[in-house]
Length: 107
Image 1 (cartoon, rainbow, N blue to C red):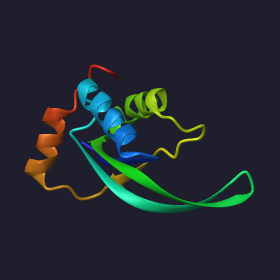
Image 2: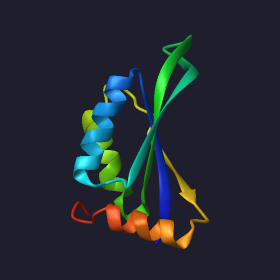
Image 3: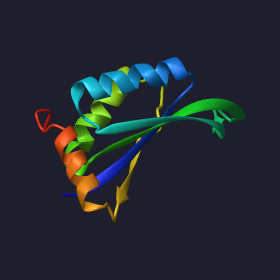
Image 4: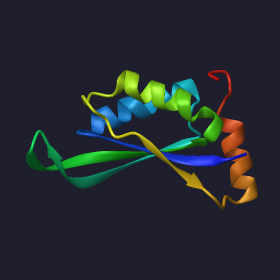
């Protein structure tokens, strides 16, 4: 099984928690971490500096498309950053836990 850590950011803790709850209800991630970050980026030609909340979703490669679709459906940004990082090494028992907690009914 291939495991991923998918990532997105939103502007408030409440938005992050709402997306996390929706994704967990769909069983598209085994675990979601929310952390506060400071982001610098260009938007419409202007440099932005804002606090954001990063969500890290632990999931399987098989569920990524469904996860991405669900994030987009609930994301408040016009152009959300949604991407995944492949996890090359995952401890066997932890990988089994991810498998057990991510369902395949959405594929």
